Length: 201
Image (cartoon, rainbow, N blue to C red; front, side):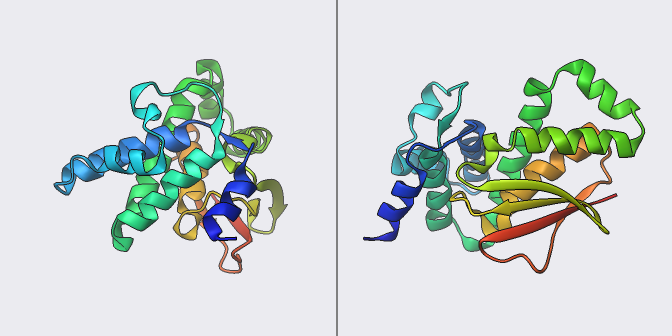
């Protein structure tokens, strides 16, 4: 059984927020225009069979296999040197959409006015509660260590180089909603299956 079939079996039935696809297509559109490849987003959407996201983007949860297919097409059909640039751009767009459209204005105001440690705690727990919308078939765990808040991502079929997409989605939320100086670092001890991140304040 080849890898594509195994990946399909693993993700069948699993779901993810539609912006994993929608915002990656937006990032590909702008990347393609910048690099004289204006049809890139359309071509990769067709390759991944996610054309419908360009015509009528869904507002409800999407099949995880759609996101995995598009992520894989990016890795196959764009220069390796640009992979992180594309995925980080898509992640920032995703986080900005979440902050703007999914977090009520009073909550955004509260996070910006509370003492930082309280705001971080509230947002970290909210991310853990809603992690199922962006980890797909992976597992997400929130913890504390001597480094502060830690985020553990275990398994999951949706992969980007050094998990830069997941890392930047979370980091951007903390930066835009609480403090631009907050950063999310990937622990050097992270393995392929279990990846650790910690928030630096």
